[in-house]
Image (tube, rainbow, N blue to C red):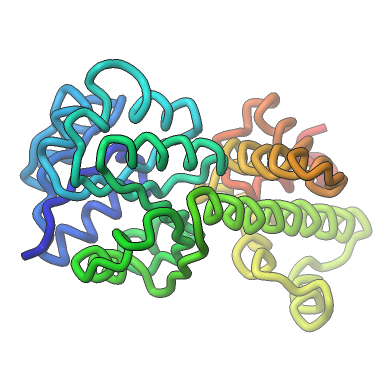
Length: 296
């Protein structure tokens, strides 16, 4: 028997993960979000409930996925109030997918264990389309025994094209912070390279081709360079989230007394985007700060 499933946090990623599991034959029993209209709309689409409390979400499903925005939101759904997700949660499995600090994952893991529940980190390094198509790359940690249950393993495999179990609670969040830190630095560097090339009058298609054949090549050259040149910054991964994630990396580095000057410079650029009202743009929008004649 497939376990019943609920989702807390149904933005673009959470909603598409829910749709994917519905397509795979899972019974999605409940969805919950601070945006109540979004909850009602997705509940109608998936033929499930949109409970008014978090405790009702837990009661409605065997497995509860969470995809929330930050540590505060995670603390609110698990550790605050009388009717949070851990209310009567013995035996329930929580799969927590957002990019958050390692410390909040550890807090949730300890709190879940204390009530007889199970917490699994499933940090995602993929886009909205990957969530919909079941092609996520997942970094997993936490309750390894729960992860290896056949019904849980099968569900996670339906959602992902590749996955790696990393270790104890918080370790997947550490690795995800490293992934996003390096991605953000690469994105900022590419924006500066293309911005300088444009200022020098070079053909940007030529520059992109040369970059692709040399040490300047990178994954973000493939995904972001065209958008930077065309100023098309439809959001797949927002500048606001980039700033948050670079900040998580800085906080982790501080715990081991490590200086990360490139990460600090990159975070400052994304913080600047947010201050200019550009935080809702895709991370490729950092090029708006480096091309002459765009934002000062």
